[in-house]
Image 1 (cartoon, rainbow, N blue to C red):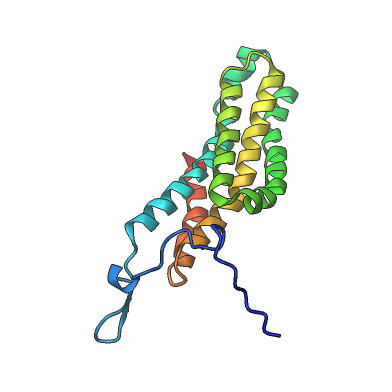
Image 2 (image 1 turned 90 degrees about the vertical axis):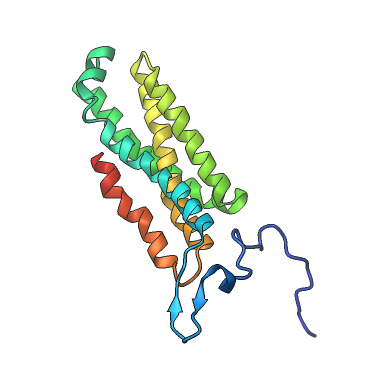
Length: 184
């Protein structure tokens, strides 16, 4: 028996970015046989939008140190309580990383990036408006969940939308921005 798949393509089997007429957009081979690579603007925009989610990493990791004296004074926290605030981000990132694969497979990469941003927005809101240490911890945990989710979803999304000949360079952007964003 011939086991051909006669099903119509679903929304999950179609590419995120159209690859039709790639040569007409400038990707391919010149008339003299030399290859040239031109990056479509929509690909650059999509990659930058996904990678800018990495800004959460830098702002979250770098936030706790300069804000330490103000937060400790405003909420009357001790060193141990503030240390918990600083370290709970990592716990949230572990939780987010554990959930990331299932969320990305079930809802899709773009929806998973949206979930991560919702976690981060809720977390930063809880931190900004907290009057007690408990809300600081909840906010920091939520931001960590968003970070853990982004750490998986962004490289996978970028790898899925880029053509093979550009994939390595585009997925590197996410990793190369970490030191820049940590220092800002």
